[in-house]
Picture (tube, rainbow, N blue to C red):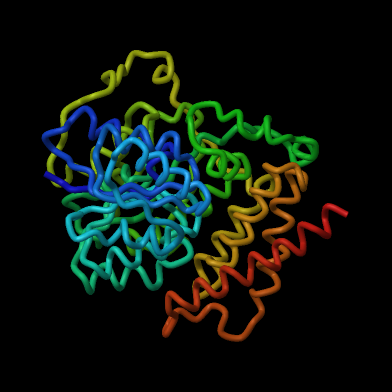
Length: 396
């Protein structure tokens, strides 16, 4: 039995993880849950799964939840803030932490969980994008398992299982193309948040859906794959595959290609990670090779002239150091500014480029040796401030 703490329990990955637990109560137990502010959903999760402690990032909402639980005679510790997230991630009763928080907020709790010897089922891209140069050595030092939950990385992981590293030629990360696949650059000028959130195949949270519309999600996944599988970013390609049936592929030195196929459902990668090295029972409808989505599988090149953030991510991944963290921080603030209607769609890329360029020429910006978690978080905070300044400039 795995005993889980879930960081981001009320989000898309968190709720689907709890669905796996719900369907397989003899295989999993919940030790702790952490969320941002959705205490209504967290309250229902507390009643159903009975964790020993929870954390709510918003302190006002945490107080509301404490009062409600006290009124109902439910005795459970309610923590708050970053310290609360870290406490949930390091509970002594927990053996596996599901990293499902959105953004770089998931980095420090995940880092602390690894320090505490917890296995990590990782859905949070930003942990490795911003902190991979620190996190991966720590994973090896503490001899814990880092289990990829992202559908693409889970697919790659499955394709590489049992293979020797020397046999790997290239990693082929598939992409749906997002809601703006096939658009020209000029078509993107007036795109609204509603347009960008209309993903054709996946149901995801707001931030990652916007990242899909700019293709930054693939940029982040390139850097994540580089850290997970020890492969240079220049041996990782993005392949647009609109049907979202093939979740990623690997090509071996003899020319063989292995692909992992399945429905566009996060339940499957969650289960692969949580049941590793075994396989769990099937809890979603079986894959139908004769279904409409499978009749014509197509592949296209990623148009980096339209979606320029992919090339920027390649540059950050090649150079390393603080640059991936800076790029990620600028992207986060720009995405949320777009969702709030403060900037236009193309201003996301404009903001990320502006912040990245401010740091890319700094001496030592691309040095990874001696980099600490404190360095990464410090530059993350600084880049967010710069991003906010540019956003205010674009908005004028």
